[in-house]
Image (tube, rainbow, N blue to C red; front, side, top):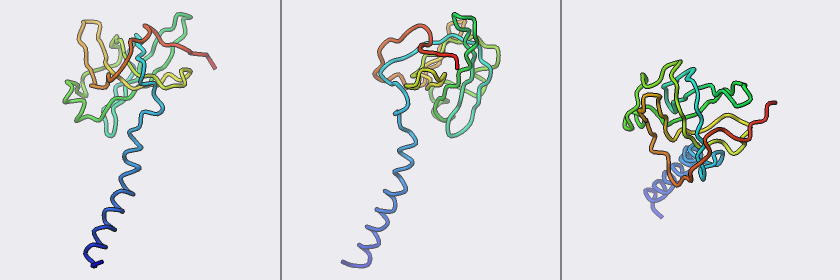
Length: 144
């Protein structure tokens, strides 16, 4: 083999080694992507930053308790392409969030599919995928 071919193969191998962790970062393993969950709540914070934007909101449970949710979206450029901005949400906004919840339903964590506002406006993330209609409230929450 020539030195040039060896160098090319070494570079390709190096690229593959470095790329694997990047792809692993965007896995769906922790989320139940087969089902959506829809939760009504009040926005407490909208965090607009790379590599992901985050929405924090509070749900009033049927038992009268407050459940603090943290849900992720995509990065700002993707969100802009879907009609979002850093001004899309503000504390106090009443929202209905449809998401893929983590598989451990005791944790109020998810990935946003869409957010509906009280005035009927809806912002989506393009992350609906192959979902089946979910419940109208969060499920499996055990106070710990």
